[in-house]
Length: 401
Image (cartoon, rainbow, N blue to C red; front, side):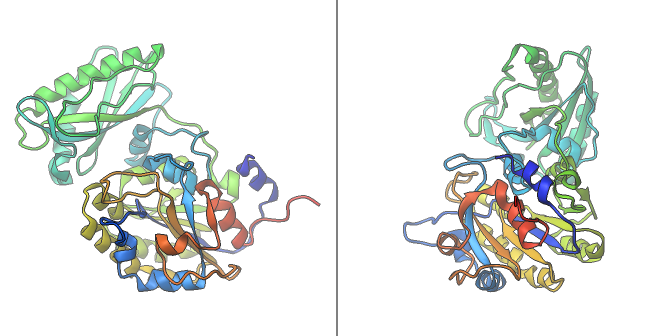
């Protein structure tokens, strides 16, 4: 079933407000058998109160057993089939920093990394180098030249930057050079089809020149490349849902994804509290708000259980400010699970909480994996979350006679 075409047929307009709060990488695992997950260990009185008033469940971002990247995970939350609409990480990063991709562009999300004397990776994120230190390094790489190709390099945040190659004969199907582990060297750019051979060669030349420029930096003396991508074609939120949608985020990638699905990125917040400031100021101007919180994910990727717990508690602390706005529908969830135990994204289903006057009550007393598995929403693919939000907001008419 094409859920978006169905929604186009039966959507209607009203004055309702929908808020989607996303704690990136929210789902977790116990560190010890029988112990709590990060969400269960956290003190979350406001989320627990919402759980008692709303309805809970678990979502599969892609499908059972499939580990999602952040792009597909968010696309599913936004109601798009992530196996149909493929948006590469490079396109997300480029759009997020305000770079408008053209028809001859291939964008690549890059990480600064730390290499040892043998050229092996000892830190995949260069110690999460501060943006103030990494931005000049990214700008320095603008001096790299490759024949027949125009190259743009843009800082992103912390260890991340984005490179855009512009020219003829550039395919986007090139494998990542990040081996996803330490103790080994970065991989060579490998074309995955005939059309992408020149792109891989351009990437190889770029990396070789970059390594020479970065060689003496104590932390960021190398780089890896991920998510080679051209500009996608995807229907927007106004077209599909009839919603005037706003996105509030700190990290550029999530701003980029929101823009690619037709949301307007608003404000320039640097903290979660500032994100809610933006939400409050813009409350009268939009029908739908996506608010993104990154640090639950990054602490999970660091393998730091205690810090992820603290980030969940920080996320809980802003809930009263959101509920004070009286949204018609409030959804709290994550785009995927990032258990500190695994220090990576995982396939585990993600807790989800929906609060609206039209909720059918369940018996969940807290917002946690153990409670949500018994919740009234059951387990469902994340791409159906938006149809649930629209229904509870009174924005869907009956289908059929």
